[in-house]
Length: 324
Image (cartoon, rainbow, N blue to C red; front, side):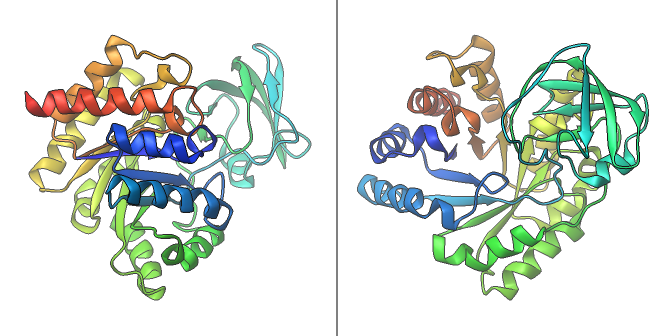
């Protein structure tokens, strides 16, 4: 079974990476929505050195930008106060023009995996005037979704293609493609990999919207692995429907004999607490019982205060489930 950490500032030091391998880490994810492979070169050098010292041949997963929608770069964090106005677009918080074009008055926009919620009050040519329904602090490059609406975008951005061009130099073993909408998205990634001479690199397909669920059979037939990415998948439906959807995707992966991993908020509380909640360890245990071949930590290791402890709880809980 694979245990993924997401690399970031919280685990960038050699001793932390070594401790993560000691706790059972077998793989790592680089989120290319926030960085580039060349920028991570020193971190990746330490990662592979720590792996060699631990006797592990790790997977390195490059998480593409893909068609995922994100906030642009902010000069400083934006504090959004409940009941106040927030401007998205020209003169305000930078967002893709496709969002401004598609969103309609009355629709809701989630930010940062629904940590913040806005409602469109008025629409202009190049901006949306919104009312903050759930406030908080917004950072650059956080996720964005117009709830109930899918916005088309290319499967690979120019930045993604640039990343694939150098992926072989940095030891990438897997590409994690976001918001896969069907088999065609997987084929696009494979064609780009083949063009770069990287046909051995595995394609992991993130299922995180209803379109991906609707075309899951084709995705199962074309991808090497599925990632049940619960952050944006939870934006695509009422949250109380998410557990059933996760179970259904897992069942279909098992039926197709396709490995799958589970990601997002497995140990979310451990970004700031040294001990997880009872619900979190039960979530991990149940994911293993459902047949998951991998479990992926995100902010817990990339930015959290307790990355090593989080990996310890992840691995030990999963092994408890495996040992039965």
